Image (cartoon, rainbow, N blue to C red; front, side, top):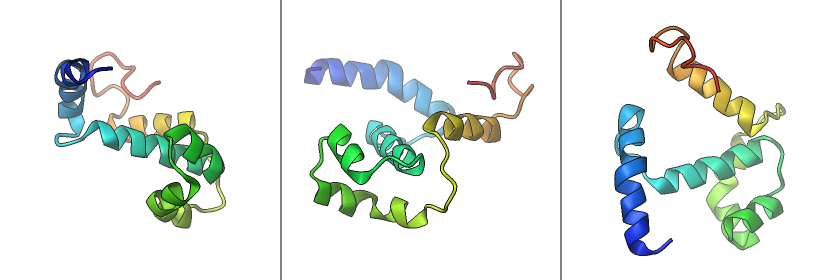
Length: 102
């Protein structure tokens, strides 16, 4: 994606979606969330670093706080997103009845 395409995507796709519930969100926040979700589902820091294009040291320094907060429960990224959607938009509150469903 070149700079023009990036700005176009951000203006036309990302900004309107973020404005619905997360004004001020940045595309970087999606990247950070993805890495955090992968760690929470039990992926190794080496896997996450590779996927993010980081060195292991960079990944550790960036995501150590996430790893420190993990409990024993491992939840798939898909399930974590589903739970978050349900918490943000309870069933039946958006008219279609499917708001909280992935």
